[in-house]
Image (cartoon, rainbow, N blue to C red; front, side):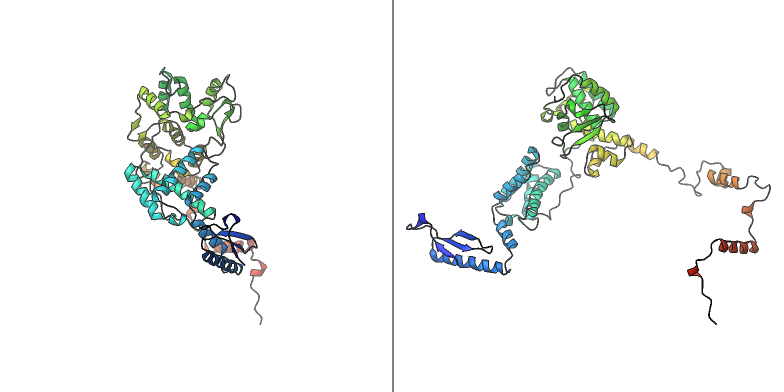
Length: 445
């Protein structure tokens, strides 16, 4: 039986609240704050006892009731819990994700889970892209961040369905705001030479250091942050094959990567790493430098345009894009290139391949189509005698069957008699007799 009472400190004071104490369906004593009116508080106690009775009889689903209470909770509590759940990723990822999610919640004026609507989120993102002149890729980044928050709500049991599951991302290929192009090996060589001969320090790196950074990026395909994490201990130059290791904390996909090194790069690294402490960073603070400015100035010194109709050639393009494109030009298969690029999806690898018109022409020339176009399926350039005799392989086979040509007997030109055919039939039956189960039983008379 529920009891209504006031706490000891509130007795004799007007305007204080009454409390209800009752036993829940699990046999535990609970206290709930009521109203300042005793009669209304007693009605609350009756309702609580009725709900306990219905739960014990299975007429109220506790899970559905918990979901309903979660939907009425303020979103601030859910956002704090979501931030703690993604805290194991990088600080940059947490900052970007939470900033985008909180901006959508604030601009759309969502207070509880029940307020989240897909149409409101879509209208806000469309208006945001129009006001700030943002592209489809940025639209997708905001949608992905808020979608990850809604998926976490479902996985954590705070809601049943994702409220924005009906929203689809935009096609980012329609409007590419930051299009990149790959450099050819000879252009990379000119870039390295220009950096070495510059005699100028850019972003705290002299010409020789910039040249080494460009070579590492092009010959390994490592990203800027991954190069910044390298130490002499990251390289195993005496291994078979020689390798470089990128730790999981510095890798983009949060996994430890071990990559094979080119023999030419191994020779360079032996000279570069001589005498350095094993734990010394080769290029500290590279992840925070404006590497695009380094490449832009060195490209201008080498006489190469930084931006063309094909795209820009920043640090990521001159290194990683050129590396993966070079793998394709060298004939590396797509699965092997995806493995070397450390991409989870092969479609991402295809975005890094820049096939030019000259590469297309070379591929077309490798196509074997000399047999196509003739009526008989024989190359039109063959002599008339070879065309009548068929293909060279067939003519050689026919010559081996009848070396004498018209001189002598050619069994392939003569048919067999009926008697020979009958003997051949019985010979096959004797060599391949029927099993016992397949033989017909004699008829009974």
